[in-house]
Structures are given as structure tokens and as C-alpha cells.
Length: 145
Picture (cartoon, rainbow, N blue to C red):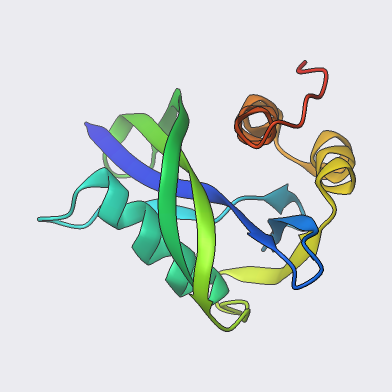
């Protein structure tokens, strides 16, 4: 079975022109990115934007694709599932920052290098290259693992 999810690295510029990156804290206490499963009839881009709204309250605009993560996991009923997660660089263009408490513990804005440090310290290993890729698209260069 194949499962497709999508999400994004959300960014904004403050009124003072400072770039900020959004990170979420998932229900396990790990630093992560908003993402979720594709629903019937959706494109991966629509899935990414819907999941960002649902998990963070923010309306976004896709700027560029970042990368995909592919892995397999064992589902108790379905057996082996091949998972594919598509990530996009997304500019926040509206909405109100609000964590979807049923799914995540929190959502915050960070300075880009602080976001990278937090990702490296408390994030999932397979998201390192996604966050690094987003920063690179924003012309911020970090040492990718």
C-alpha cells in the first residue's frame, strides 16, 4: 500500500523585515513540520496547504518544492506501507497562528538559525535536509548533515 502526505516549511517576514521560520512541536514533544495525509481528489500541493491551515491556522502560498521523504512502516491492519511525504517552501500570507491541539502541542516562529539549531537538536533526522533545503531556498546556508 502507498500513502502520500504533504506539508511545508512555512516562513514570513516581520514588519521589521526579519525572516522567521515556523516549527511545530508534535504530540511526542519533537520539533517537526506541519504535514498530513492526502485526501481523495486533492493534489499534493492542496494537501500541503490544507494541512498547514489545519495544524497552524496559517494560510500559505507555495513558493517552491523542497524535497520528498520516502520510507516504509508496518501498519497493524494494512501491513507494510510505503510512505511518501512531499515538502514545499510556503510563505505565510494570512490566518492566525494557532496550534491544532488535537494533533500538535505548539507552533512558534523562530529566527532561521535558531530554527535550524532546534531542528538539529530536537527534530526528526529525516527532516534535517528538508529544513536545510528550505533555508537554502531562502538564501541562508547551513551545513546539511
